[in-house]
Length: 236
Image 1 (cartoon, rainbow, N blue to C red):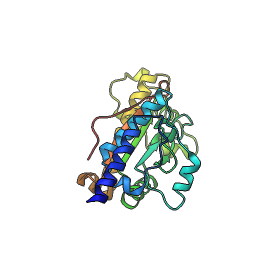
Image 2 (spheres, one colour; image 1 turned 120 degrees about the horizontal axis):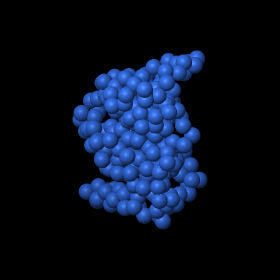
Image 3 (cartoon, helix red, strand yellow; image 1 turned 180 degrees about the horizontal axis):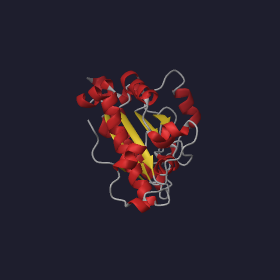
Image 4 (cartoon, rainbow, N blue to C red; image 1 turned 135 degrees about the vertical axis):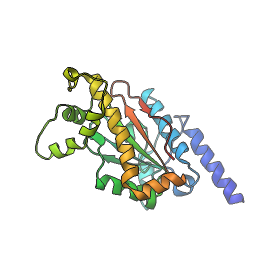
């Protein structure tokens, strides 16, 4: 009983530190993560993004985090985002070494390798949350909107085009990359389709979500403000 109380107190202190950037935030260890729910994991990311937007990044000793994670890692979330140089998940959510798994691919599209990485993170490394993160003014989305063909990029963009066709609010003459509202509409649809594709294509992850072991949520990063808006409630 004492150990349980002690571990819970340690975890509560960690959560409280998320609200105070003057603390030296340390990497969440395996024991602390055991008490984490998907909702708590999401809140940690929201708190981190708020710090980022307000230029109040937490104080971290990165060398200390290197030493703390040298024998293993215990990331609490896995984030799929675009390769865009402005969308580094560790920076956007103000996380340190060993805190999150980061998967990056143009247009944050889903393929077998991405799903396999998520299965590893959640089933084997015990991550609590999957985030699919799109962003405004996405170049890959623009390419899909314009039906660009270029080497192997062509195949990647075909994975986004179902989202282009699913956008029904924009008239034909305005359905191109010059219309940023259209581009951002398609980005949002693409994120939501990716979330559903993960659940449809991975029995392992679908079952973990159904049991409440993990959560999955989509979000959009605004490259002009630095803010992340998450879509609807977390799936669990």
